[in-house]
Image 1 (cartoon, rainbow, N blue to C red):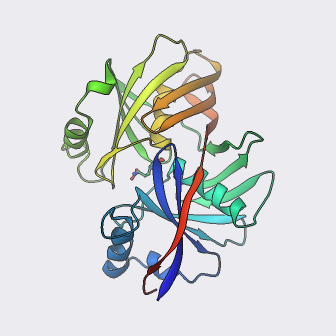
Image 2 (cartoon, helix red, strand yellow; image 1 turned 180 degrees about the vertical axis):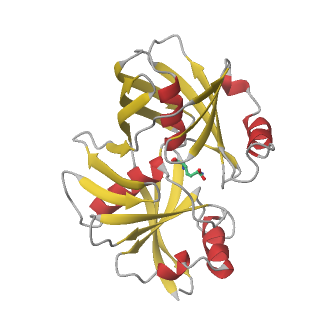
Length: 268
Ligand SMILES: N[C@H](CCC[C@H](N)C(=O)O)C(=O)O
């Protein structure tokens, strides 16, 4: 049966979206192998629509909506920062126009708003722990991230090295997203490349990864920080308050756009 889908992207991190407010697509989240295969195929860039992930805009009694997120491998995932921003834009495009949004995601409640300039600001969960060894950092910004500070980041073999770290004994069981980060000669600007778990490839940007990198590269030891982040897919900003190892009021800010909508044969 023909089903209507919507394609969105946030700085090149792209997603297949379904309006599930009437629950018609709940089956995709039933945990069955069949549904996992359906989601994987929808995300396939040759046999399906193509995307780094798939999201359901679902109803929730206590929030404006619930975000159900799947990685391109078809499996339910942890939080997706760019996905959250795209889902807010999708909700607005579907008529849920509000100055502020509160929605539920895999890592808990989130606030968001669409700014006057059209950028979508998404509040991320607080971070209270960053493991640090040399130029390597491990932290969870709603999804787990390995952050490696380096130079000449655009000439690194991101897929080979990212895959190696993601499948190393320390991380192979749960997986981890791998970010290479370069601090430019601008005080508060970084360049980030990410190998994404569950996509098992480099993506053009990763919202929770950009957030992790920005927390690691705090310019002001304590107090308010704003970090400009350049990714292959475009420009994002991360604002936050740093108080020792506590990071709060973390906002991921950037564009989110509808690319196209269409129909696809799919049994649900
Ligand atoms: N692949 C990630 C989830 C999506 C993260 C990324 N798309 C983002 O924008 O945060 C994981 O499995 O941890």
